[in-house]
Length: 309
Ligand SMILES: Nc1nc2c(ncn2[C@@H]2O[C@H](COP(=O)(O)OP(=O)(O)OP(=O)(O)O)[C@@H](O)[C@H]2O)c(=O)[nH]1
Ligand SMILES: [Mg+2]
Image (cartoon, rainbow, N blue to C red; front, side, top):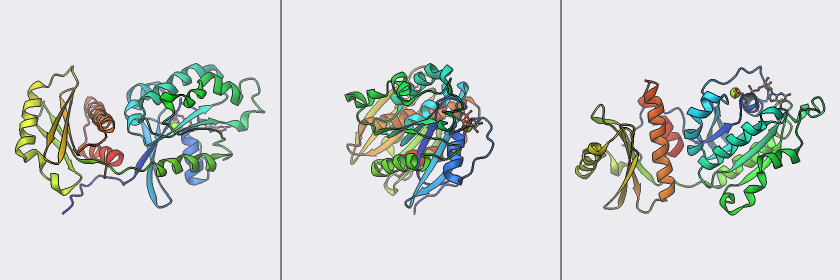
């Protein structure tokens, strides 16, 4: 029987909205999902909106754009995103360099095949705020957006849209393009199970088998040995990765901050995506743990949502 832990809010892949505070991310989500915009207040942490497109479920993760959220949670969500919507307020000329820096940080964190749209937002203000509004050309030059034609970034599908979250101009077109790309790049998960071990508690704190054959994997002898061996090496300040081959499975062990994350995959799973997955999971674990609220359901949900079968 398939186990179905309580607390997984919904299935689906995640598209993440990023951009400085006041760029218009929450307004864009409201405009597109509800067709109306309400008065927004700055997003604290994140909000999640569930949407269904062409029969596929998605989570739109609307991240807070203020500095404290950028430096804490952005990286984790960028690493797990299957698509990114970067929103820039074209009238925010004063902070353009700050936005540029964060934009490229995000691009470096992303999976190399994640599609990205750059939404140059608030074009309804072009006429009213002639002084501070940037032209498309200025934006492309400042953000160096032509870099997306270079080898290093060519894997990303990338497009710029000039939009107004307020009036709805180009909103449908931009979302259609991004979600179309995300749906098009669908790839079956090769992950069979995830296990998290805490050195402090000296026990397994989370185990999610995605397929029946790895049920109760902490009880399997070789996995128990792998945990035992790696937990002795656990050092708070170091992060390591080990790799074991086992029958028809591969076992990856990531260690960081007093936690082990063990990922069991099919043979020859794509190494890079497993590595990013392991690191993302441990980042989430350590952020939640440092806030003193490592909620297992929440963690399960994050893993399932982002990488689940
Ligand atoms: N004129 C105009 N105003 C907009 C547009 N999009 C957003 N705004 C306004 O910009 C302000 C900030 O919008 P939010 O959607 O809250 O911005 P955010 O990016 O979610 O900000 P954080 O949650 O702090 O990261 C609000 O007052 C919006 O009404 C737009 O296209 N045109
Ligand atoms: Mg917001």
